Amino acid sequence: MGGRPRPSEPRGVTVSDYRSAWLDDELDLFRDAARRFVENEIVPNDPRWREQHHVDRELWNQAGAVGLLCTDIPAEYGGVGGDARHEAVVVEEMGRRGISSFGHMVHSILAHYVLNYGSEAQKRNWLPRMASGELVGAIAMTEPGAGSDLQAVKTRAVREGSEYVINGSKTFISNGLHAGLVGVVAKTDVTKGAKGISIIMVETKDRPGYRVGRALDKIGQNGWDTTELFFDDCRVPADWLLGPAEGQGFVQLMRDLPYERALLALGGVAAMEYALALTLDYARSRKAFGQALFEMQNTRFKLADVKAQVHVARVFIDDCIQKLKDGRLDTATASIAKLWITDTQNKVMDECLQFFGGYGYMKEYPISQLYVDSRVQRIYGGANEIMREIIARSL
Ligand SMILES: Cc1cc2nc3c(=O)[nH]c(=O)nc-3n(C[C@H](O)[C@H](O)[C@H](O)COP(=O)(O)OP(=O)(O)OC[C@H]3O[C@@H](n4cnc5c(N)ncnc54)[C@H](O)[C@@H]3O)c2cc1C
Image (cartoon, rainbow, N blue to C red; front, side):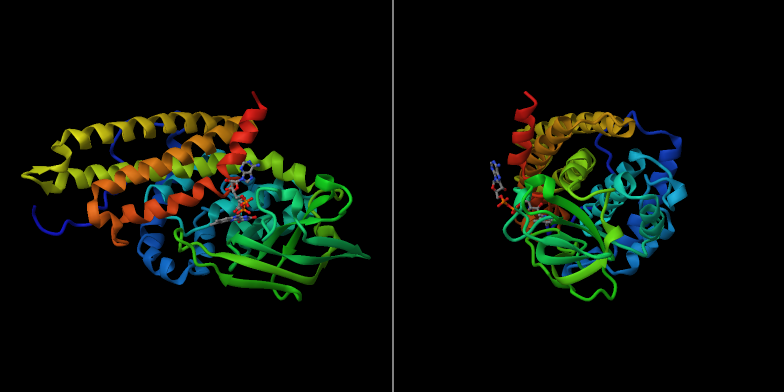
């Protein structure tokens, strides 16, 4: 049977010569920079971050300095001045090394809210500092009593003169520990249902009434801080309301969902590509009954199935990325991507892990991390049952 196998670590993905049609030479150069950053600054530190349940705060400034934050925010607001494809490249480079610790995606989503709905003064105030990593972004929607049903949020923001006074608590907030700017989903009018919801931006530094809970202990994605946030008579200037008037929060959230869901799904595709590469490498080297696992027909057929699913997912997500870049990605299509790709991701991780036998159950082997990290993909960003609802409404 041979000795203890090494945890395989193929760099990059070599299982296909397929190339996404949305790529070009400039994006290849950008990818090289992103890949160097991931290999040098992230991969060596990731095990430590998983232990401490968060990345080091400096990572944000380092990523900002090399142009990996706010890549699709216009240069006039301090961003990199690229488009959705640049953001896609960053997501891919993290996913292709199984990195789930760095919450750049949530950061970008918040930056998009500011870009799309913020006043000129808000954009100039927050976006350059988000692009440099000085401000880490978080989005606080979920509460202990309101997850999928966002209209049930209880956090209140009451206008008092030139301020909003915020009271309530949020849970499961990604980047919660380091967040310097939080988009808080709150009720500004409790009588109006969805039309009574607003997004109030909160700069957190030295803010009385704002408190961050402990980093939550999750089954996966352990290097990414997820926390509770508490607002107790937390006062912010009234002009930190996002948008020109109260009551637009729900619509703002809905409009930006395709962006979030496409990137989440892309992360799933990249993680599957990595898992397939790892598994092929392992199955070729691991021997049992006098032959490599890969020589067995069951292995070959199962991995052929995996390859087929990953390839279909890749082609579909590439279409979504192109549409996202062109401003043509609709909510139903983004929901299809999120639903099908993250469901498939979970099946693929399970199939791949099986080939590693007991070693696949050991944290030392990246496939085990990919397996646990993937589970939440069907829950956050809108549970997959909500995706089915949205898709069904489009029928
Ligand atoms: C690691 C992690 C990170 C997160 N990051 C953030 C963040 O940064 N910001 C933030 O605001 N939130 C965040 N969340 C919260 C996440 O978005 C919610 O957990 C998710 O929306 C589901 O809400 P819930 O947990 O309250 O589950 P519930 O709403 O209670 O739903 C539980 C289950 O019920 C089923 N269900 C619910 N509604 C329906 C329906 N209409 N039809 C059929 N079935 C249904 C689904 O299976 C669902 O999974 C994060 C969560 C996790 C675990």
